Image (cartoon, rainbow, N blue to C red; front, side, top):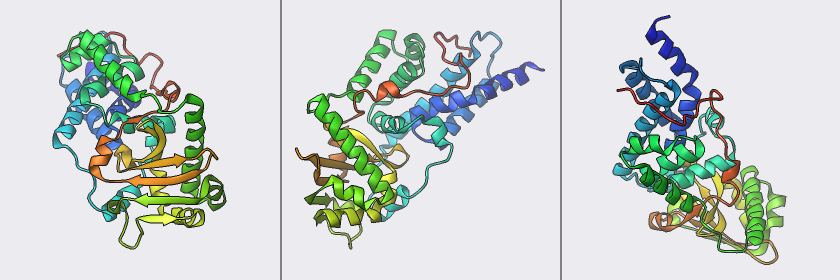
Length: 317
């Protein structure tokens, strides 16, 4: 086997791990595949003979390609969708089947939504170190920062991801369970369960930008709100439970791109009394999103091999 064949074999063996790294940085399987392919082109044209840790080297190159994409995306300042018709088309588009392989559970989907609010450098520092175990020394070289600066970037990211709830932990935990039950029932059009979760006088309000002209911006009554959910089951499938300004709510984020927030008011009777669906771009940008406490500790990433997480990286150029 020639040297190039050997490195190609090693790269292919690590491809699953590399796609997972790129996916958690970019939130898109298509973009992740582009980053991995670009990484291979650089690997195949580089002097790899003196590289001690091929997997670590592959990871660094792939992460750099993903980071370049992420920075370009931020520079373009991708705008929210402008009308309900386009929103409906995006929300109803099924995610690629292999996305479930890259995401271990719904917690990871929530994590991707919150990560999208970070700067590219913060996202890279957190994902590479906290999720994939890459050393801060390697991250610092990748970001052209000092190791201390890389640690601070990851720390700031953690602070945003772990934002404290506005209520007591037990109350927040109870409300998260209610919101999760509401989301599950909405996805399945489960009217009996929805009627149990909704207060008789519940009110649903929605920004006009998110719905067609024939849909009222305000609906009152448990039966009416429950029946209406059947019209929006596809949107519910793109939903994840998050803390929205410290309170359990739902983010509708097809392909991890935030398009709407559901602010849910739960009363002392453990029923939902109000649902405010936000789609206004300014209100979306100003909302503080966080993954519920304890959720991040359950997030794991499946790697291609047992030793794919580098603790030190020697770069070949």
